[in-house]
Amino acid sequence: MNVRANDASLRSRWDVSTDAPPRLRIESVAAAKPRVVSGWLYGFWLATSVAVWATLFFILPAFETMFLECGLVLPAPMDALIYLSQAARSPLGVVASLAVLAGSVGAFLRLGDRKALRWCFGVLALLGILFFPFALMALRATLSFQSGPL
Image (cartoon, rainbow, N blue to C red; front, top):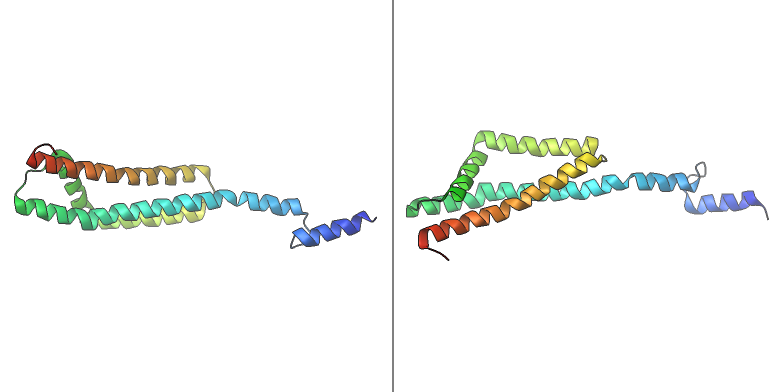
């Protein structure tokens, strides 16, 4: 049996190019794995950041007008959220949010395969998720502050 014939049949079966051995192709696929993981984390970061900014832009202003029309005194957590919403809706807040999103796109495109960037996107996504329990706690504190314990 000819060894060269077997090598040629294996190369044509598993590898597109017959110049490189199959193990080099497998290593290049394994090297692309961090890019895929960071892609998932990046998508998760974008989803949470858009959800946080949508909450600051659209949902909290409705609560702000409702509380102001009723003349309610707001506790500190809800007052902090109202100030954060007002800052996000200001021209500087809009520019800052667009700069953060553009910077994250640029960082992902240039450095998407680095472990530190994957950690950053993971931590930022976690912080975005932690925003929502804080907002719910502030809303609950406002309602219980006005009407007694719930």
